[in-house]
Image (cartoon, rainbow, N blue to C red; front, side):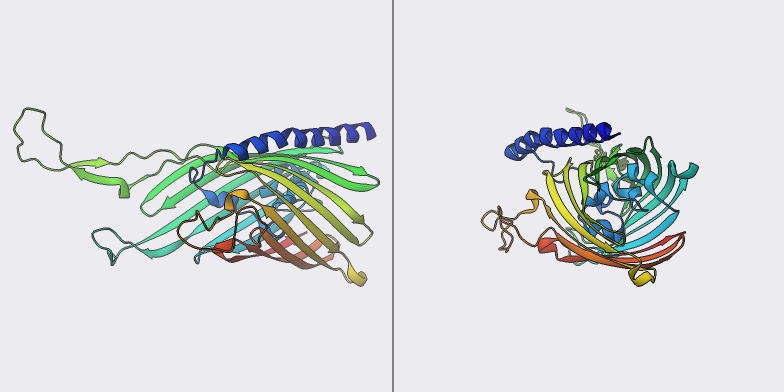
Length: 375
């Protein structure tokens, strides 16, 4: 088994090294797909813990949030669990996520379901002809419902997949799509300290193509060339829309316990991510946990992370006509996330409350709150 662990870790390191030239080449070419995908809410995450750790938690989600971050982790759940969370996003919008998962077959398998919603309502409609407003309102409602299956194939390796049904309602148009996530987790020890590696790909699926009454038009058919134009009734028609791809994301993550004690743990995490609509990114996070403090059953956690996303750096000289403190080639507080959690456990019963702060640069700060239950 030690040889298996060494070989698996070697393969993980080799894969990371092989990714490096591809990242450099992609960055040099600046070959990005900005604005070419839909349903961006699929990237908002799940739970305050994952938000505080910047997505690097994909190798260490042994709770309900594995439904989102890595379905391969779900089989490592020690007990059934549920979570509800809410994300106060920009411009008075809100994202909510909920999940429920159960270990099965003595812990060798796990099943779970999750749902996420994002949107806003009752926004005024403005047109070129009526710049003061038409008196009508519109709303946006984006939703997904997902089911996850995960399995431990050995004491070192687990894998899983998630199937999602996606609904995207924009005003009087709507689209429906289907997507899948795949995830794996390899877990071993180095110097008696746990180390974990994960490979995840998210949102592989169909394009979203909108239809609806907002696309209905009335047109007059032009007369054939050389004929007399005669009065005619307007004809009903619908604008034809193109399909927009989903935000596919590939993620490689590693987690290593720097400190492992009976009631305390310090874990360092890192990740590399490659989306189909942005430049590659990378991040690192640190989590400290203390459990059963004073044999009271209470536990606390502190978390922080920083995520580098080069495409989000703004250059005042070439920006969209405005000055900003965020400059290309320098570290800023954009990408900074932090948070913590508190909870209580007795036997198999567990309650948890977590909070995360995430800085979105010129878009401002956002807050994520989640409540979890295990039994």
